[in-house]
Image (cartoon, rainbow, N blue to C red):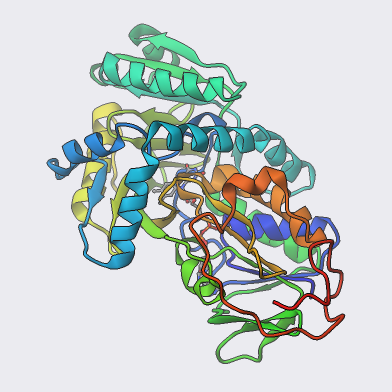
Length: 440
Ligand SMILES: Cc1cc2nc3c(=O)[nH]c(=O)nc-3n(C[C@H](O)[C@H](O)[C@H](O)COP(=O)(O)OP(=O)(O)OC[C@H]3O[C@@H](n4cnc5c(N)ncnc54)[C@H](O)[C@@H]3O)c2cc1C
């Protein structure tokens, strides 16, 4: 095998697709079922307009206000765990003007190609539910609409090319009859945005990869990665190890453990979120709706309506929190009077959150053949296919890419961990930065 992709969520499967298309022999290993992590019940938005990093100037003040409201979109479970304290400190530092501007610039630049990458998946014959209905942002207050508009204009200043159309209250209600008049002060239409049914995307990618002869293994938890004579040994408890030239770690919020032994400090926290999916809704909005104050995403699907939201930090249990789910349902009732959660399927998942709000995509310095694709926070569906596109050439050529510099997995300060001396000439297909004789 040329490459083992560890983790079969939307990011891992997208990376596997981009690698297989370039002729690599790929195996994908997932501890559970493909797409059963964060990639299952999320809102499925593909939104190049909404790429502002989570840590922003003012986020800490807003978080303090929300801390007093038990039904707010943010819940922080304070913890004295050193990893949580380190993450929080780094997050706070990333809310500086300079940190936010750098993050915004990097994410918007990456996002300019998202829609083309989705079109390519369709052209390749990957079957998934894909909607091009735009996105409607709706505020109960003029203030919320103005704040969102300001952020969107910053994104446009960084290169977002889609239209941003402010709407009066009457225009919003005319465009979206499903909305309650009492829930609308104004809105913004973003006609270029899209959404997908994330379960169908993961299923479609897996089926496509199988069709191309990619080896896909579910129930295959990787517990260790070992550098052995210029290649990588992937350890799977209960099965023999697998030797490959390259590994891509795409294990979502659980990515830090596999990388730590190789000196990668990835301060990762799970940002727990919830969704409620009604299989046969009594009303279906014309397009996805973003309820600005509640931070709730409304996604209409073929035969279904999903509401998703909440950011719960410091939690590690996948239990459903009735109060949080109730807050999402209440937001739905306020905005869409006829909406009923009867018969709904409730879900919780963990967004992989790095404290600067950017994903980690790229090679691990000093570990030739080891790569990372994780930390996509609220943008894993949006950025999944693009992550594959930008990472695959680096994996196959072994050359670092300038485009990936802001997303380096080493940006949190790697520890130097010596590699065992490798056999001369042991690397197969190594690129310019993989000299076979190098001792690491
Ligand atoms: C409520 C909610 C709404 C969201 N809405 C959107 C949205 O509208 N648009 C958007 O772009 N993003 C959205 N997101 C974020 C998105 O869901 C994530 O960014 C994305 O799913 C992350 O994908 P992933 O492949 O990195 O991780 P995951 O989907 O979590 O996949 C990781 C996989 O790795 C496997 N794994 C873990 N450890 C191991 C191991 N040791 N060995 C083998 N396999 C392992 C797991 O089993 C899992 O299948 C939302 C998230 C939530 C919670």
